[in-house]
Image 1 (cartoon, one colour):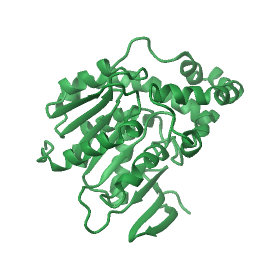
Image 2 (tube, rainbow, N blue to C red):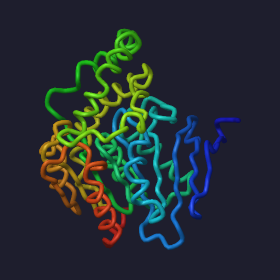
Image 3 (cartoon, rainbow, N blue to C red):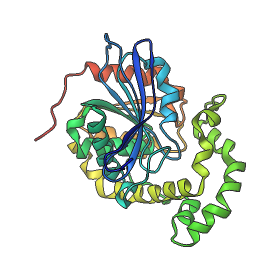
Length: 308
């Protein structure tokens, strides 16, 4: 099949009258994977787009939100470029704005109009970029423990090593697979801490795929590009017109709520901040009811039309 015209279904099914389609779609010379679960006829919510964080895939939000939201809205889960089943595409896709452009094209190809956009962690930066670059795509913006501002200390040494031209290629093939397998469970526990790691999370999310050499190196380059992007774009957040809710935990040791969520709530004109006591970095799994309540709240709010 010619990639220039390809939009090939990986799997299609129908459950209780709701169509589920997992598809690879060309978005400009490379393909992205997305899964669309159509709403039932009496759906009470607008379409919802989920953008996953670093080192994961669409399986992460799918496992958290499919069961409680299925039928209530058209649920659109995407693999960001270079993750899961999506091809990496051009170098600009390492940045949140490049990924936002790709997702906007994907929404057009899949027939997704304005949606409530939910972004977790790194996906929060991509969601913010989508609000800046393609405001016409947003019905509302929901940021979960987002990474949005420059942070002290730079990026972790293993990301720096992985992103290097020659050494990085060797490092991700000789060191990362073994070290990653040994550290995977402890790393997953630290992401959820102080909340417990859900049973079967590593297997259900296919976390092992993140330590494959190409995937790990791509993720490292993304993290490096993210820091540069936040430095360039943090001042632009005041231009976001969409109704915005930010959900974060006050014990998040992965992404500082003070550096990121609190600053964002002050910068965006129509923003509301929800800080959950005792919550770590995973409100999608550990405060799912609050996230769903936030989606419902955004659906009820009068829309702010994007500027022309």
